[in-house]
Length: 484
Ligand code: MSP
Image (tube, rainbow, N blue to C red):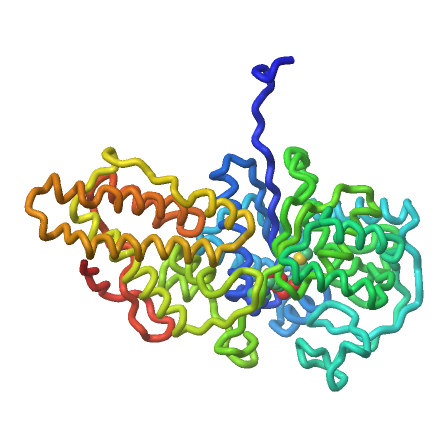
């Protein structure tokens, strides 16, 4: 058959975020991962890939049951409220996901049952008495070695000693195979440091893990043993599977990219592929691990009261600027620090005085879109950086272009040129460059990119980034006009 007859089909791209615990409302840590996933999703769509972007909430287990009880609420009802907060936050941030999965969704419960039944049939599950130290906040067992002063190092709380008879998964059957697949990049773990970290874990005695809990009531019952519920991490990982099982979604399996924070690497890089190997499913292609940020050099925590609500950032800066500010702090894949002051300083420097001012001063000269062509210079570098998830570097590159344009205008002083035609001509390449900037910024700041195109198409200018009042958490007030 000739190629001409072949039906053109877009290559698929299945991207996921972790599903977030609903014990509390979303904070900027969750927003960080989700915005990054949205940027990539929009980028791959613009490359004509058929994208499936999955995010959602992790709703079962002791941690959520405890939070619901503390709030005096029924767990399902409590989950509904917080899941709603996540959805609203993503809407405010312009997140365009394909599905928002909740682990209390009926199709998820069914998919998990089918998956685990198969592991049982294939003899990868067995019963065992077990005693261990469990941290409810982590939702995992900790070894004596991991404790600091007898407490969980992350949550500073005493783990509970749990003795139960549980169902165990034969993780150890798959360790050699997984190690090999990670070493050869068949499962690509990036950045390099994360890959090294995972490979290091294989030398530290990984054991079979329990996939059920006797005492936790808020969970999906083990299909063949209703005295137990399924361990929350096992069904959480399976969310990626559930969403890929819907009939028309099956074509998206396997995931092309799991985006995660460094705290949950072991679950994604070792436990998850082992479960899939046991089932006989194809494995994810890539896991990208980004860093964690601190606030004013401290861990973000409710007790410290330094948690930043992304909705407040959107109120103050708008959705696009918030997306920009999150990604422009430090390289994706490294740890970094954020502060309200730094966010505001970057907003003013890069957006209000940088890009916003550039567009405002050039738009005045009414160089029309029709006269222009978008420059393709730098696009190859841009594509490579985007594919490598180097968002920080992409934004630096864009900002350099903004600075360059501003310098050109200073040199050419179009306002001193008398003839209108010559004036416009002196700015033609600058406008082309601005349009290239808009194109590159589009996945990061979709509305702003469209506004820039509109401004140059119609000649109608508008202020892109109003100055913000420096009061903490304040909403934009009386935007001052941007000068040239
Ligand atoms: N429910 C599990 C994930 C299950 S995925 C099958 C969970 N949820 S979580 O609500 O604790 O979210 C953890 C994720 O939130 C991290 O992996 C990371 O993506 C993001 N972050 C949480 N705090 C963060 C920072 N301080 N900095 C950056 N990202 C952070 O773990």
